[in-house]
Image (cartoon, rainbow, N blue to C red; front, side, top):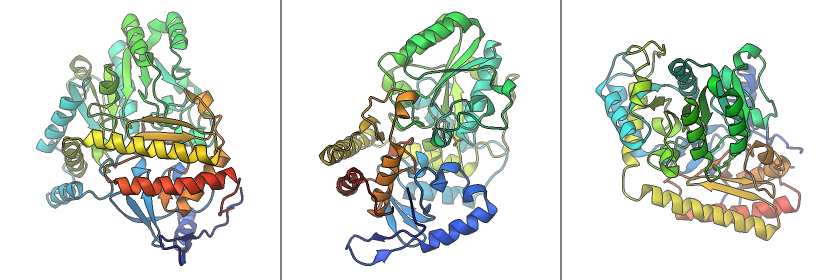
Length: 452
Ligand SMILES: *Cc1c(COP(=O)(O)O)cnc(C)c1O
């Protein structure tokens, strides 16, 4: 697909085309000083082509770029912004905390408050340790599971992403999937030798693996709703089956709920599906847009963490006061009545409208959704795992992406990511998104894009 550097789009009144000249200039400068011009790969628009929009500000569900173009945002900083951008409760909490000092490297009462909120909501968590990123949470959970069981092997699933932890960069999702790289140079073979990879949603494969290697397996690490190969919900009985395999073989079940935690239900996917893990990783929503993540679980296991136990794990900025304040404000806002019902209703309407738009344009898609995480795969489907996800027509997705962007809708610049609906996505914004999708799918079915 040919994508010129300069894109134009019309504003709502259909007049005066806006440009991307300032984003282009910023991108040129960025590429001189940062690999690919970005701080995280998928932001560079490599999978869809064109100029990444440099963002000036966000308010509610709307992003505004350097050139003054506005977009209804379905990326939401890749999941954290369930309340929308610059939610006034979160901003006020951050300001208040900042005025009292940005970091102490000493315990605060606010951390206790956040820990209590987490434990009250997430069924599988009795004690929690705060860290700074989902990557750190997954890395630490793996270390803890290995220490607790005295075993080395870890089971993960193809297409699931648990951050850029060396031992878990094996057929991971997201950027790696997008770039078609099965793993990364720089990860020694020895580090991944104890990582066993299974297809998602295939319990029989897990049973076979346990029959052979059960005694070696410290933990099964799984996204209870896969969100990093697009959205792939668990098959009926898949999570419960993993639970009983772990029980039979003395292995720990670790749910990576960095994306699903506080998003699909107050207690995450484990509450939604009624399956309780031994350890849980949290992040994204937990920090309300600031760097904050956590791992937690059964008391007996968490008591192994330093300084109470021998398993070392630490962090200069862990439990940072600003991030903690943003997390508390976010979790408190999510405790208001009807929050999850509202998210469900708007997400359902969006999915329905997108499906209708695709059908009337004759574009074959497979839709998936779990609460306010959703995906439109450009394949007939069904999509149940990595192998079926990668049958998607990523060229068609790229055309759709640009057609939507031109109409003021900001989707993830990759087929293999979720759309996130926030509480700031009003019914009107959802309807205008559906309208944009009507035209965008038409453009896809004609095989063109105004950017190509
Ligand atoms: C985003 C994500 C991570 C990584 O979190 P970072 O904060 O980006 O390190 C890990 N696991 C899952 C399921 C995620 O969605």
